[in-house]
Image 1: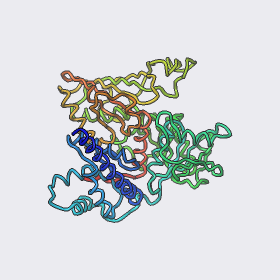
Image 2: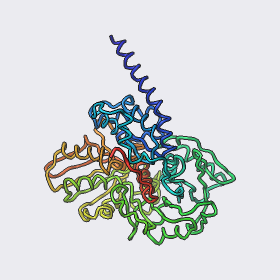
Image 3: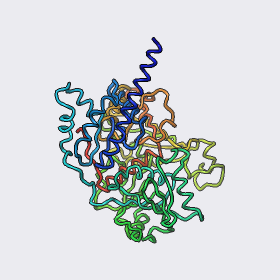
Image 4: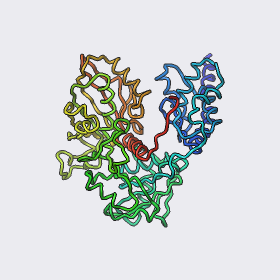
Length: 481
């Protein structure tokens, strides 16, 4: 009997693998030929291997409390490929569940044609011409942005990474920068092929030519000589944070807009993608994507405030060490940061609590904050200790945040876990701004404590790219509605 069960499990796995393998070329063609981004309950299927497609389906059981397999979704995606669609995001998991609920009252083809009628209008381009992107700086965030932008290049009609501006380091500068893009100690190998073009001083990543431009000052670069026009420049150096400093980029030929990957000063709009996108207007040319911590906590704070009301609170972040700290004890202009980062927990300040007010004015003066740098290279943890306007229990607040993470305007920002075994390294590569750890939630009366994990490098970079897409006018309609 045990042998029969063993064989049954193996055959079932092999069957599901075969379905997923057959889905791969369909997912790829939809993305490359029609700019269709397919997903299963928010988990993207694009550019993923077979095992990740299976895992995305497995995730759906958390929502449905029942299994959803590739055997179920295969007929749906197969029917989608028979249509001539305009660009969109299509959740085949949600479509499948909706179809199953109909109990076979119509064919799969008729159902899919009905659900996607609004975009069954033929292939169209998203933009009149690809949006040029320039990275100013090629460090931790710059290289991750490059990875994500290359991954999302698709047919090349959307965002096109054209260049990275750096200071030349050595004679083999190009080789070293290509190597750093290819290999990463935290995020692993680049998914694809990287070569260099020495004649053009460029890195070729999955067919995308990224010129490496050497410059010491923003205004000294003429991007038009490289065929770059009307570009969005992402400044990930953090060297300039005010309008005057960042405005130097706009003096360079070929640059139309600037996005800072750090909190902006003065009147620069600080935007957390998904929360206050309305600040991204055609009249403004300089924006800030705030900080990784602000991006992690603001969506959760907004969700909680909208439903329960926040009277006051304290935000404590356990943040991975950064390049701003020393590997071994040495002089540092800031207090405590001169002590060895890999060997110590270091109390330091964070502007995240004040930054929240720039994004959510209704919380002005209600929050305090502090930070502890901890000896891990990536993934941080925000602890939100909140007094609410009403009593709340664990089931109520966890259930609410779970629903927000699954089907709401904030589902790309807030993720949710109920595993009793997760630790920080499990969230490396998370594409969400933050992940609510539901089993750590504490409530008593009108007080609650929420624990929010966040990949302060990759998750933040995904937020930056979402903001760039909004700036470029690349907002895809989502189906099912």
